[in-house]
Length: 274
Ligand code: FAD
Image (cartoon, rainbow, N blue to C red; front, side):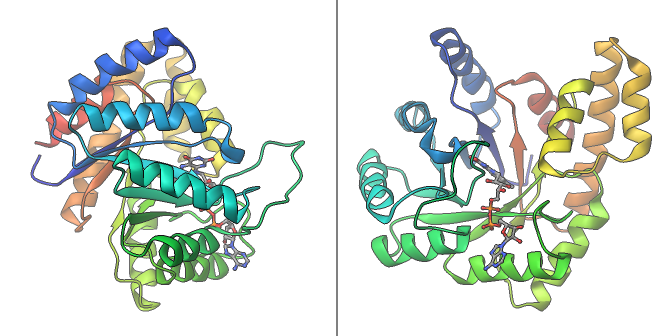
């Protein structure tokens, strides 16, 4: 594909999962990603697995981005992890607030992702390129769409180089968000996050949790397919490749794929868009 692509993975929980992810990465490297990113469990819960996976990607000769969430963290702990990440050869971070699992107190010295971005810049200058999260369909905890957009602009102005969106299936929401952000003086790339559709129940569960809207016609079609996985995958490929085509035609700077540690759906999409 002419447009740059990047791929997101989560740290595997078992040695079998790690082996499977190694094979998945090799398949996806054939598509020449600009970088691969690895998520980071809020409260540092996956730090070891995140850093281990990032290390493997770097050793495989591919640029790696480590996600990094600040909720519940202290300045000292963030400072020491930044030293570790720099020592590992990481040059790109996805800086996030994160969500603490219920039962954890808020605590910590960072309230919002903008605090983390400002801290990383103050501590490490230009050592890292910084990505932040964007929400074309509005973050679920935002006071209002305007407040969320303003919060996005604030964290970009704190020192982000680029942004990646939460996934969405309505391209109008993306284009509107990009225009509105531009009006607030945001001039960094807003890269659409693309979630392939491969399973009905998983997608519906995920989307409820993160506030991504599944349009009614997609939801009903998925429910009607029931256990017919082949039809769900064929429908998903058609819907998501159509979305990507509209995003590319409308000027999206690149595409970031939520791979869910699987290669088939992301490969099929990128190859179809080639
Ligand atoms: P923020 O930008 O801090 O925003 C959080 C909320 O606070 C929003 O409602 C915003 O409107 C509001 N807000 C911000 N600033 C202010 C202010 N000054 N005053 C009042 N309100 C304000 N989660 C993980 O745990 N690990 C991951 O690896 C991970 N990767 C992600 C990658 C991408 C591309 C995306 C889109 C999300 C990812 N998430 C991840 C989820 C993310 O952590 C959650 O959506 C979280 O709830 C918000 O994080 P944030 O960085 O967007 O927060």
